[in-house]
View (cartoon, rainbow, N blue to C red):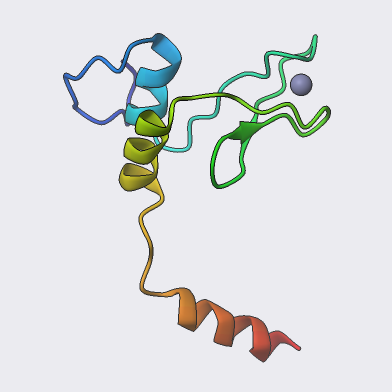
Length: 87
Ligand SMILES: [Zn+2]
């Protein structure tokens, strides 16, 4: 456990899953590339930016992950307005 981790005693089944649930902005290391790239959240799974390979976390885990970090935000309408304002 590192600074900034959520205090959550639940074991989600693996170190990576525990990090995903407890560490803000954590992304897993890419499993398909030789380097140490991190994968990027694409809204449903994590994906490699180079090969587009995606993780295959079970739906139940992804549901909990999204509920924790990616819950629908009320500010989306405001964000759209901000984008229009930039044009
Ligand atoms: Zn990769």
